[in-house]
Amino acid sequence: MNIDFDMKDVAAVGRGLLDSIAGLTEIPSGAFNIRADGKSIGRASTKAVEIISKKDKPGINIIIAPGTTGETVYIPVILTEPGLQDLVYNDFYIGEAATVEIIAGCGIHNDSCTESRHDGIHTFHVGKNAHVKYVERHYGEGNGEGTNVMNPTTVVNIEKNGYMEMETTQIKGVDSTERVTRATLGEGARIVISEKIMTHGRQHATTDFKVDMNGEGSTANVVSRSVARDDSRQQFNADLRGNNRCHGHSECDAIIMDNAVVSSLPQITANSTEAELIHEAAIGKIAGEQLEKLMSLGLTEKEAEDKIIGGFLK
Image (cartoon, rainbow, N blue to C red; front, side):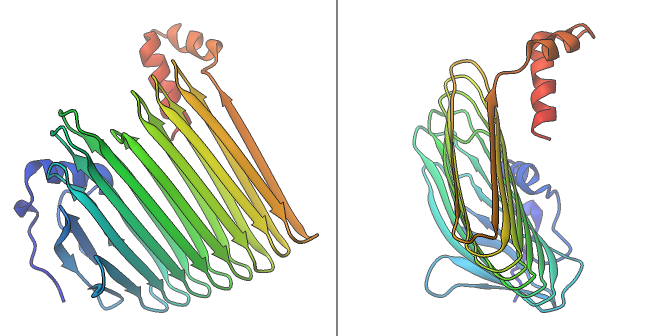
């Protein structure tokens, strides 16, 4: 069942948020669900993708038919009402041998002096031989003194030879975030996670990854790149557990600036003699020679810093 929807029905500030987090300037041609200020305002399903509301709690079920190809599903969330506390549960059922891209994310506009908050709990059930690309962007804005809080939780269960790629980005304007990811991998299953975060002011960001590689031949690759500026704080936690013949790799690279604080707490546990696990971490400031080289080309120090940061987070 589709909900009648026209992008003109969304206020200009909301349209700007949708563009920032999902690249949406008009109604998508395929399946989508747009949630604004605590409720769905637009929805469409296709023959291969069914989106239905949950009956017991806020959220939706997204059901991808087996063998699906060429589908992109948009499920962005925006908050523009001041002081709104939004909680949503979304479950994704990816059929066997399906290939799909899912574009999510949350944008908050807060001009008030109160907290605006979105908590999203996303659970993925990835079938055998299925391939999923999941893109999630977070963005906050507003002229008030209120805070923008986003707490995404992602739970992933991947069956035999399934694959999931997660690309998560915190663009700017998020005052506090607790980012939790839990993944369980079956035989031959693979997960690739790429996280990019920038914090500034007095913002705080915590990332917590836990991956259980239960299946023989399973693989996990977790890479976090972040920039911490001003008085912001970041903490990266990664826990990879090899419970069979598997390969796991986690990496945390951070640029620290001004009075910021960054910590990395890696943990790798081999519960099998055939588990191969690696962790890498690097935290440091922008190299002086990099700045000098760009400034010699005519850039100001700030322009040079922005150029380096942009390349680092690309």
